[in-house]
Image 1 (spheres, rainbow, N blue to C red):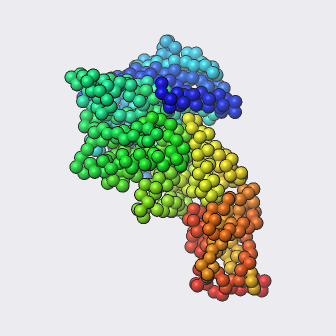
Image 2 (cartoon, rainbow, N blue to C red; image 1 turned 60 degrees about the horizontal axis):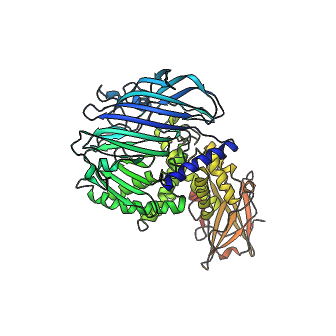
Image 3 (spheres, one colour; image 1 turned 30 degrees about the vertical axis):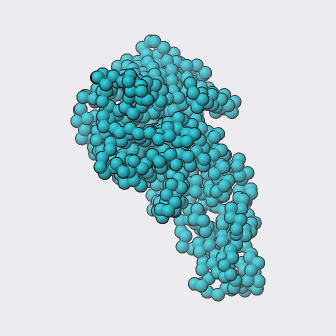
Amino acid sequence: MNTIRLTILLFFASTLSFGQSTNYWQQSAEYTMSIDMDVTTNKLQGTQKVVYINNSPDTLTKVYYHLYFNAFQPGSMMDVRSLNISDPSSKIGSRISKLKDDEIGYQHILSLKQDGKKVANNVQGTILEVILNKPILPGKKSTLEMEFEAQVPIQIRRSGRDNAEGIRYSMSQWYPKVAEYDYLGWHTNPYIGREFHGVWSSFDVKISIDSAYTVGGTGYLQNANEIGHGYAKDNSKVNKKDAKHTWHFKAPMVHDFMWAADPDYKHVTAQVPNGPMMHFFYQETADNKEAWAKLPDYMVKAMIFMNKEFGVYPFEQYSFIQGGDGGMEYPMATLITGNRSFKSLLGVSVHEMVHSWYQGVLANNESLNEWMDEGFTSYASNVTMNHLLPDDPSEADVYGGSIRSYVGMATSGAEEPLTTHADHYHTNRSYSRNAYSKGAVFLIGLNYILGTDTFMKGMRRYYNEWKFKHPTPINVVRAMEKVSDLQLDWYLEDFVYTTDQIDYSIKTIAGNGDKTYITLERQGEMIMPIDLEVTYKDGSKELVYIPLRIMRGAKPVENKEIQRTTAEAWPWTYPTYTFELNKNSSEISKVEIDPSGRLADVDKSDNVIDFTTIKPFTDPTK
């Protein structure tokens, strides 16, 4: 066992011990699976052994599994949801309802035992319920063994066969997967096409498949010299006459296992200095050849940047695999459609790789808090793309795109709070804007409140404190409080639990001798501190910083090249706030709220006053 893998396992053991002492706990499982894939019938036969460890304080009388492939059948909950929602995903639409018998997906349980004895079970849609013969007590474990068969559906949503680009197998959600049990109980939500939540596990997986196929995905290949296909350093042991090859993968400390296979994959690698080996699997064409050839160098740079800024990626490899229906993250790998322009290919690759931090290692319940992985990933992806393409004008506006997207939804009248379960949004648009845009704006707002340097310290602290665990929103906020010594519960409560909006304005500016009085007004329900930049006619600038009293402190000076005046804190119940400048009003050229562009104000039209366009100042005392 090498150093990195040993470190991961030792860290996991220490986090469990630490977690127990602080009332934090998480379940764990050890999977051993062997499958035989028939590429002519698109069916597989499989055996699975799961050693399930109950680290909870509760006695478990049942265990649940997800059978995701069962969603790809006419009449499934995913099918009916797509047919009835007002804005169905274009990737699903009515496609499931039209599947033929040899195109549907299914996972059939042929036998199931608990500790060697048959156990009662029943299947409802995508959920398998196991009624245990013997309860699993706190701190104890039990072994569940099953035989199953599955048919791989035509690719519709994430997983499946023969996708639009001709990739044979995108094998995500392909095996019976133990459902998560945590402080909220069992998470047995049916699969209707959205998000996931999984148990931290180890995987030992053997995949037998036609020897012409190249396989990539989660885990470290154990028998590279028997396989070849770009993995082997010594191809002399590869028997190319074998009808099938058995690929043996092991993956420590992950919460899912994905693989993909195609007979036409090109496989290339790139080494990240002092980091993981990157693998790239794709069908090379005249149209995509140049884009895929450029991708490895850029992704090495992206990994180096993410390791430095957001925390170190803990595994020894990462794979970019053409497949699926767009882009979808999995442990140690991603499925992405590959027939794209270079910038599109780079963008989706960066986004999905960044998910290795926000969901791959920080495994929040993305069904309940999807914005913590999609939104945080969007934020870090934007920052990374700006680093990779500094001369591209479209990548320079790191914050603006997310803010504009969020404001569009917030002012539409159809916004739903971030606490909405991913499956229960009224519209796909509302889900998408919350998950990707408002989730990113949550971090942009923290950046604004704390200052960039302190915020980035908080992001790294959050990562290092909660890696290989299941963080919740409060854990993000607490990490930020620890590095800033500010109180931030109000921010979480307003921005996540409600649909309150930020809307501040410059209400009046009035001169009185050598003093100027500026009055601000809070027109929205959500409270925020204020950065107000005053530009003088001589070209100099001053930043007036107005913290909130509820913060119990102030952020550090961000730009030392501009004088900053820290004003008295604003009590949030006061709708207006007036402060005094020791300057004659005639010296002022412009006043602007949030010159950095990080405040998600829903109406910026009243955030700037240019004194060349307003009436003369008046004495506020008259």
